Length: 303
Image (spheres, rainbow, N blue to C red):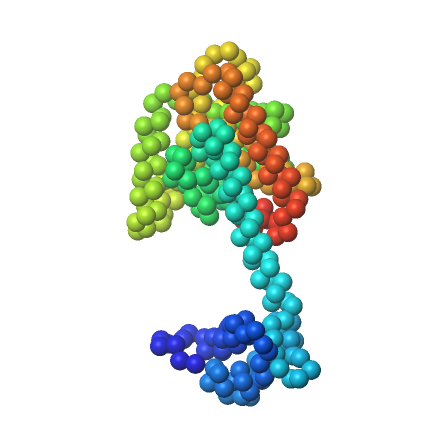
């Protein structure tokens, strides 16, 4: 079974080769046929097949031939479901982005990091992409943190020191009572935001310094300005708006993800703000309801 290069683990490759051979066949194969096809010692092939059969990865038929087993089929189905789940989430985000005409992102906690589970593209989503992890620094992840225990909330507040502690504590209160949080766009922040986004995109396309890109992305995640209180958000004034976030709850009532939209506009009217809020809240509920029927529980993957 030559591969043309030095293999660091020949025993592992023999197992993989047997599974792939059976997967490519319509009919079952005997141990001798498998060994001869792959140029393996027949005793070695027999030992591997016995181990695979013991784990349910292959099944030995009454005529002493082998086919793929039920355990391996279940693994394949789970992988296919995971791909379907991601496609479903990405479609939900794209439809939301179309309705609000701005970028959208879905994030989840991953230890001491925030993971971007799904992100819309080509809508100024500040250099982020699916799968990226950034350090969990306040205010990032606030919609999830608001529904965790007091100790976790204190740790999150401590990531930014004491200068904005009261503001971020109020953000957590708003998320628990109103179900969303909105952030103002500082007048001079958009040019800097776009520069950092360009830098992050460049580093993603030309990976040379992962640490630098991580620092840039972490900075981008906190580039939201200051949070609005509800009376200001509900006022008749035209307001600058950077982004809005809401929690996504699973069927057990746990906040498992944060849904964000980023208008990044300096002049948003009251009706426009409430349109954003309606679409954001509706999408968060749709995604949460959808998680109940997702067999692979995508929202648990980042843990």
